[in-house]
Image (cartoon, rainbow, N blue to C red; front, side):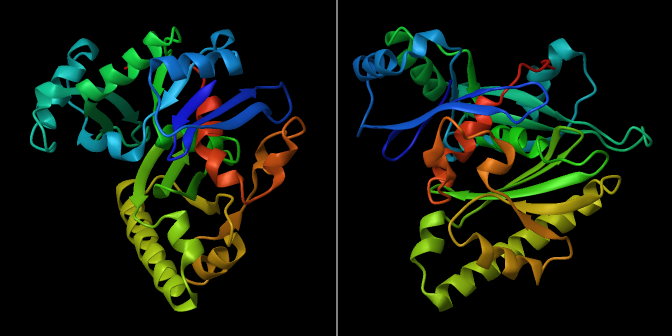
Length: 301
């Protein structure tokens, strides 16, 4: 069961993988609450039978940083110590107060001499400890603390063509998220400071300005990607489900050099058990939590 705190409470989603078919969404809900303590979370656990599941929890975008560094030439056992030293001046707090993890960005296998990079994820140690303690107090210990970028990657993998890269753009209350996948790996992740509410509430002139801003961010990010990873050809940009999807697609398609396409959750998930999710207005709220629910255990570096 994947979980994520929202402005309204907790978003939950469970997905079953089905051989030779779309993953099936077996449960999704937003449990309303202004705040959660251990007692409230324990009550939620009983209502939704959380003890039956492996539990993953996604951090919100303002609770961590994803930094790109050159992969240090050290043994795997020394990797986190080495990257901790590399990022010490990139954080606005003492690196000793950070919990970190790493995510490899696989290099071009045909050009072994090229630079090798990786993502370093850093969060305040106290924040992560408090979040883990909250779930332990509720007798619901977490298996994984996850990230929105990896959740979006999980959905993009379902649409990724063999041998080509796939860009994906989504929007929610926190803003926009651009990712690029290749061979099932996350190669690029960029935040765009435009929220779904801004797009929905804007008048025609404001919406055009927001579309311009989004387009400029995409152009810069994709140009950077082409220079950094010229061995990957991006087949298209997929625009995740959202109200106003068609209008934004048309604008992007007329201003970007990559083809732009759209999809809805029903294109990648079996929604038979949750027909309310067929409404595109509801899909952005659950999008990243469903992606986190697709998580499969990966090898660690």
